[in-house]
Amino acid sequence: MSDMNTQSAIAVDNVSKVYRLYDKPTDRLKEALGLTKKKKYHEHFALSGVSFDVRQGECVGIIGTNGSGKSTILKIITGVLNPTSGEVRVTGRISALLELGAGFNMEYSGLENIYLNGTMNGFSEEEIDRRLPDILDFADIGDYVHQPVKTYSSGMFVRLAFSVAINIDPEILIVDEALSVGDVFFQAKCYHKFEEFKRMGKTIMIVSHDLSSIAKYCDRVVLLNQGIKLGEGLPKDMIDDFKRVLVGQYELPESKSEQSLLNDAEVQEAVQAKAAAQKKARTDSTVNGLSMNTLEYGTREAAIEEIYIEDDRGTRTNSIIKGMEFTIHMKVTFHSDLPAPIFAFSIKTAKGTEITGTNTMFEKAFLEPVKAGDRKEIAFTQKMSLQGGEYLISFGVTGYEGNDFKVYHRLYDALDVTVVSDKNTVGYYDMDSRVTVRNC
Image (cartoon, rainbow, N blue to C red; front, top):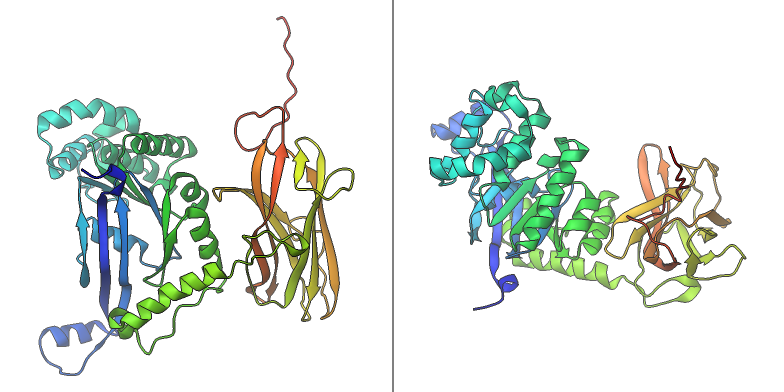
């Protein structure tokens, strides 16, 4: 028998979903009645030849912009939608929390909906009876469980829906952005449950715009854009690529038509080649402080040419003692006239969770135009409050031209910094608390 982590829980094989879009409702009617031979619709590809595997015991995230096909692929996996082409194979009992209202009768009480959902998932009334205390305890909505669901707030609804989903003993849990309506305490309880599920070897798929949660909880991430899979891999790498998509620095392959995205194997190969090319954009240089894993992109109307860290004595170093002041430096050369460039840095963990950062716009430190040929040195000085450990620093020069956000040059994970500490508290940074104890 193979190791559990090598067994496939979900296999998505070349899945596409095509919708017919009509300009007028009458066009749909005419076509349905056979009153026209002319094609009255155009095809929209919600998904185009998407393939990936989710192994048992993995927590896999799906990220992408709105309209990228994230929810569509989850609905196909759970059987809510059928694919136009391709195949999905699922091994194990799925519990899905796709959207508010899915699987619930709004006229029934919360209690009646618990039994309804349990029955739909193949449980007997006696089995639901045994699980009921756990469901009610996790949902924590009190006597509202006896009221019609249509009277619930969105927060109460998601508490009950999530509680039902996780207490029917699923082998695969699928959650689509539903937790965003819960309060912070409920979200913490849900993520604690995710960690418990992972320890039990259960499979989890999450769609979320909360990139910090994706980085923290997911073993692997699939990046979708406009129905095409741009890549899959470690959360940190995929989140970096997603940010490039957001600023238009990650183009889709050119194609003659949307139809070719579905059937032309060369286009799919181009997508994979594009993803591979982006990875190869990492430089192999440590010149002027750039690390070997620097990923860079941008219009290059501005260029970050040197970056380094100084300690409180003005010594260049990559090790900073916790509690001491330090300065992050970046030197930038401009190749175009720019209205008001913004200089930024951010710090994240080795897993890719962004912890902190700032820019000159936030700090109101520099809001001036620059000319081609100008050079600027920017210095950010602050106290090191992070816990002891290894961190990565990213840099950027961006700006607004009218209402358009522009990335002139961005360096991901360009510097590593080690925080030296003889006292680590809980979390990412030290509150530097003053403690007093007295008799009372």
